[in-house]
Image 1 (cartoon, helix red, strand yellow):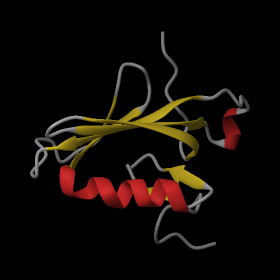
Image 2 (cartoon, one colour; image 1 turned 180 degrees about the vertical axis):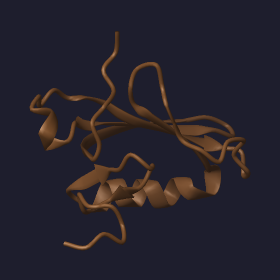
Image 3 (tube, helix red, strand yellow; image 1 turned 90 degrees about the horizontal axis):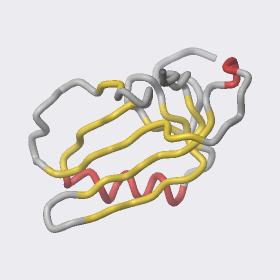
Image 4 (cartoon, one colour; image 1 turned 45 degrees about the vertical axis):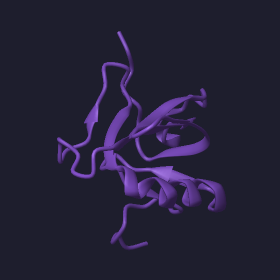
Length: 107
């Protein structure tokens, strides 16, 4: 039985795959501090391709991590964010940000 990632998750490394009309980014990192365990694991996967992704909703895979579909036009922005910003956190709602708090939350 797989364990669902506890979000927000700190993203510490990523890998990119690219093909003719598709690309993907696998995000690896650590669960939220409350989980207690600091084991490096996949915390998210972003698939880029269709200009109008089929699903509006991100979902959790059988492996317990967040799976997101985005248009291919968003790939460069995600790569710039991953390359230039540290630390980065992946939120449960699919937001990748440089803060551990969800966008719009007070201190």
